[in-house]
Image (cartoon, rainbow, N blue to C red; front, side, top):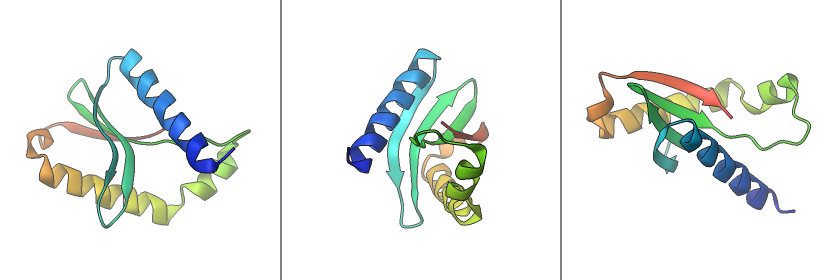
Length: 99
């Protein structure tokens, strides 16, 4: 199966999971020139920037390699751009999750 299809399926499942848990989905695949954030959600005064990884038999070592310092830096830069554009969330907490 195509990795894009698998990734899209994983993101869809992650969105459904978050909705079931009471999260409001603010955006999917939010992009800037610095990068992309798979899901931006909101719950209890907290903006959640979520990276979705759909990897078979994923171990913490594999996840650590995929989410290296460079990837983390891009996610942080992209999340800052989101918060600059959406100032209504500037007084809220922020959190970074991996699903």
